[in-house]
Length: 193
Image (cartoon, rainbow, N blue to C red; front, side):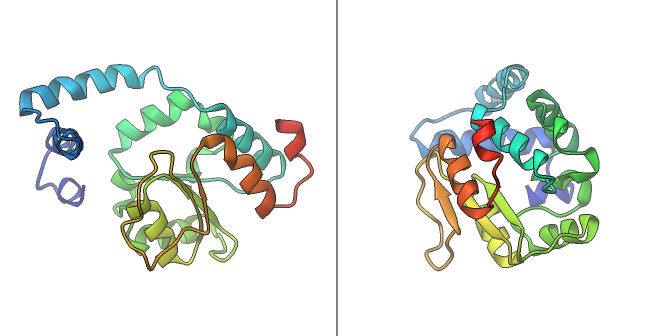
């Protein structure tokens, strides 16, 4: 991703690299042409993604409680915005609180990325909770920035570093409301279930 951000490789090079590496990790060899076809199918399927019900309930509850919400995602601005719009999260998160690495010039897990957000929306790192599914990008990044974190480890992956831990971990999206109700004392949790 950093090579793409610096202009060393194209977006398609990045996308096909990710697909080829992901398949390689599970023992499937994929040619460049197959990776391009996969990317085209991925873009087509992306138009069908939906926000998981527990995440929708979480966003509704946090929004009702007037808790400041934001998105931080790595990727190209247009691509990530298509996903954000498809999921409908802009119903709860204002556009000025959507941070995409391709636009801001920093990418996770760099501390600069998290500090950029702190400066833009004036958050307190000690009370900020970052929810993410990538240990490497999200949990390590949040840890070094001094933010609390929830690792959505729905793929049951092992941490890449043993000296860094998420503050909380869930293996399935349905667990997010109970974790958040432990962290934030709000009466509205029962209303959203």
